[in-house]
Length: 338
Image (cartoon, rainbow, N blue to C red):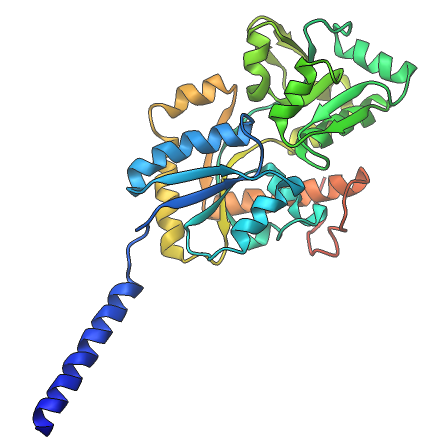
């Protein structure tokens, strides 16, 4: 009897170990993935995340559900992902706004995340088609004549497009009235409904309205000019307002995904490979062109280095403009070298 008892116990132990081992080596992904997009529908982040997610479903073999969760400068979705299990099944749909998380006091800083950076569009200041401002010089003169009356909408206080408009303001030595919205889509809607005089957003987000003759670009908040169908060549703000050149050069839009840095390496690797394949998909190049964007396609070490470097610049520029809620030095974010 004892002999059979020992055999049974050994068999039970071997089955338990096999099951435990099988669970430990469970293939990722084995269930649907949820992505929380930290801005509103229709903006650059939303469009890029949904495009890439649809392609990544093919490679990963599971469905990917995208939910918009705007609020708190991206912090609402950021903390939703952060407070979920760090297993690769809850992903953040993000942009460069995430690099302001620390100084905006909404979510952990860049060192705590891994990045999958797709691409991004250059910044632009645009007006309604019926606007009396035909050039950026007209808009600047109006702000100089009547400070704090020219309303410029943006995707949120302390985000990239707000900062770009503030850099233009500083470079031109004028004072605008900055009007924040919960994403670029509602900020552009405010322009089209004439609630504001201008909008600061990405070229990709407003290109369709420019092509349709509903909006008119005045200046690129960049170091390079850009051609728009129906509007011609639009000047670079850095050339017209050199004092704004540093921010225009070093702060730029990127769109993609984020996962907590302590997500299992094998999961990050699998997600990264699917991301890379989506970026190389034949449908992505025309998408990028339609978005007037550039391809970045970085993940892993290179993406992390880019994010940390840009976080440093973004955080200290935010402090210099008086927007930072937390001091980047106190957060351990090094000051950038000019």
